[in-house]
Length: 266
Image (cartoon, rainbow, N blue to C red):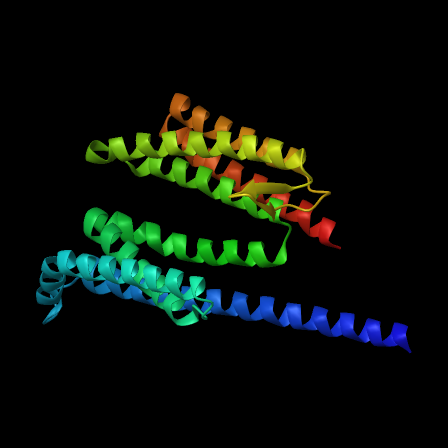
């Protein structure tokens, strides 16, 4: 009886955990749909405006309003972040301030990128939103090392995309991003070496944090760092035409990793 009871409790705990994961994935995808809809409306009525009555006036009014929108959303982001931090420190639930923080932060990012980069920025965001939803799916359903691999590959893809699209005044942004990407790749290698020596855990602020499983595949993370670095360097050397094909090469690498880690889940 005790064995049956423990087995039933384990099944119930597993079912509850799966329900929580499913709910979180659905929340991410629901939020992505809402944000994507907002971006499509921006693309239609702010970027690709026509001579229809009111469209030019609306786009002009929105252009003038962006600085105020950026200011309001920035203040809202900071206030909600502080609210969430103080709520957590006092042992209270931070669900509401956490949600509001995400809403204000998303609005701030959309406002800044749309105001600064106009059509290119909206196009980038339209691709970034579903990518973020996929990253959430990977985080909740796959091994954490595959999530890191997906993030690194996505950063490499973004670097190649920026290399093909950035020009003129945006060149400094491209090179700044490539420097940040190089730092992230080196940091990923160093952190993985540290975790491999400590059973997949990191010590932060005196607390031990279990990041990867004990049997994590660190070699795939190292290999992904090398693949991303080679792809970006090759694009810089060979030019924008090569960058176009290197984007497909990185997507193919990510697909191979997805198949590999899906098989490992079975």
